[in-house]
Length: 324
Ligand code: HPA
Ligand code: ZN
Image 1 (cartoon, protein in one colour):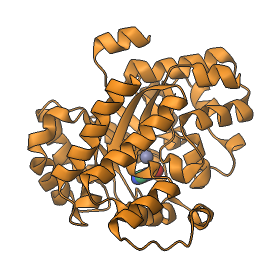
Image 2 (tube, rainbow, N blue to C red):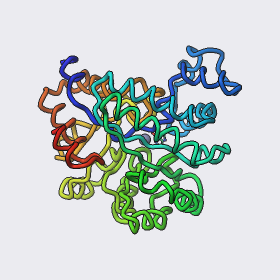
Image 3 (tube, rainbow, N blue to C red):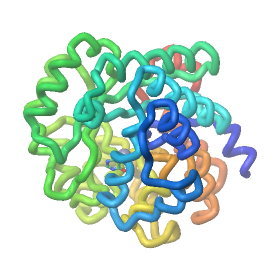
Image 4 (cartoon, rainbow, N blue to C red):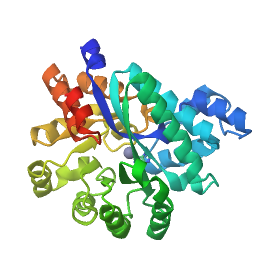
């Protein structure tokens, strides 16, 4: 089964590139840029990754990305991830990034885009994986800031496959971002949003009604509203589920309690993803393997989850045909 899951052509649709920063690279970049880290060693960094909730993770996530300063840093970050993903049998990756988190540290958008763009082109050329780029807005920052950053990104709109919404969910409902998502829609840019991770099912409904998203990131708390589950099923709105993330951020107590089997039973379009692989215990393959351990699903179930991801990915139709 392990071999089957590794060889299965997988697409990863929910991945924060800054959350793929392994401690080894964090230390290398800290050295290169003269940035001081709050950890004595790679092992100490890993040992610090014991989270109580989303916010306690976000604190270390924003701290860790302080080592990213130049276009080469963003290139190395993404290339390091693409190589690991490729080795796990991943054939398509959609990387989210948080431009505001870098702008706030004085790192220009052009620097971020150059590094990520260069890594995407090299991964496509040398590893044969296709990629997409999702520009995410920080929901715990003001909505007008998101709008300014989005307008500032005008020179890059062509290379952005979707906009997203992430960071601290509670108290920051999708409704706060209605305007910037409407602007993206006007420009024909697809929309996704984190909703129903720590926030309530009502946030999933808002993401659909007010942001007109085509996919929901996480979305696991939809189960609290049966009518919403029916709607997600009927409208075939995919959820990008991240089981190891949900365990590490205590969205669920234990992988055995994860609602994935109930979501599957409800007939939803589901995909399996890693979210922040450097912080949550592994990449997309580790997430597939954790589900195999916990739920003993058969090959057909995993094949259909992998197929879902390819069907709903942002990729051109020829690539999709080739992968299906
Ligand atoms: N949830 C919300 N925001 C995030 C996450 C997450 O798991 N990772 C990076 N930003
Ligand atoms: Zn996420």
